[in-house]
Amino acid sequence: MPAAIRRVVFNQKGGVGKSTIAVNLAAIAASRGKRVLLIDLDPQGNSSHYLLASVPQERGTTLADYFRQLLSISLFDKDAPSFVIATPFAGLSLMASHPELAELMIKLESRYKMFKLKETLDSLSDRFDEIWIDTPPALNFYTRSALIAATRCLIPFDCDTFSRQALYGLIESVDEIRSDHNPDLSVEGIVVNQFQARANLPQRLVTELREEGLPVLESALSSSVKIRESHEAAKPMIFFDPTHKLTREFDALYRSLSDGR
Ligand SMILES: Nc1ncnc2c1ncn2[C@@H]1O[C@H](COP(=O)(O)OP(=O)(O)O)[C@@H](O)[C@H]1O
Ligand SMILES: [Mg+2]
Image (cartoon, rainbow, N blue to C red; front, side):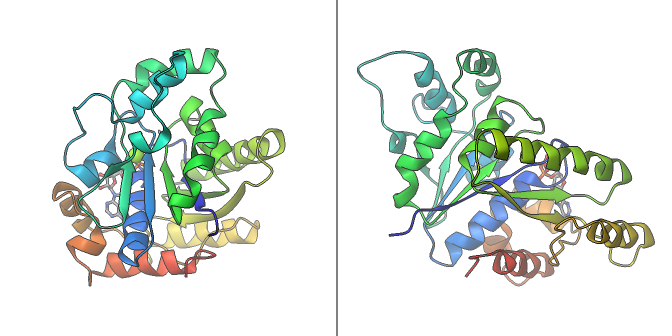
């Protein structure tokens, strides 16, 4: 059985659609019969909330428990599958966020635990077809761990001039992680989110980025209030409104990704 495809959704800027894209593409994969794992590394837990409505309170089941375990030497360590929980959606599993992730970060960093997530994903890899990693809006310990653990990186882009400047630095960060730690990592594409096809500026920005050779994906996502409703209902678009325009765009985006099948 081939190992899982591992994707990280990364952009240091908040509010560009990382969590929305990670959850909706993971949900589409699951709806197509894939065995999918979503890993929510953002202490804010937006993806976990999106899938579960509430973050699990039970001790021992979230990524905070997983990372805390990395800091203590114990004979009774739980194995990686213990931290994978089910969601209400068939085929879609979750390693859930917890606010404690924020406090754990400095210790994890000072004790060089950045490669542990990759080891863990290696051990989980044949249980899943696809692993999607959502990251915090920063290039910190969790984001670096994800870029080391993944092989493909999707970068959401909101067509803002400031974001464009940040994009170059962002791609440099990915290049640096690739050359220092993870030769298998590549930028799979830049996903244009909340695209206003009729406005001039976004059109021009996208054209210019393509001319510069940046891998801007053809499948853009338009803006719709339905996304908010879908967050509110804790149901990804493919289950909340399967025929909506944005759902079709997510589906087209998913199919356009290599091995999207
Ligand atoms: N295509 C879209 N149309 C409308 N609203 C969107 C769209 N994508 C994201 N949003 C909204 O923008 C906000 C930020 O999205 P989110 O996925 O949380 O970004 P990030 O994870 O990068 O911080 C959320 O309130 C979300 O509902
Ligand atoms: Mg987010």
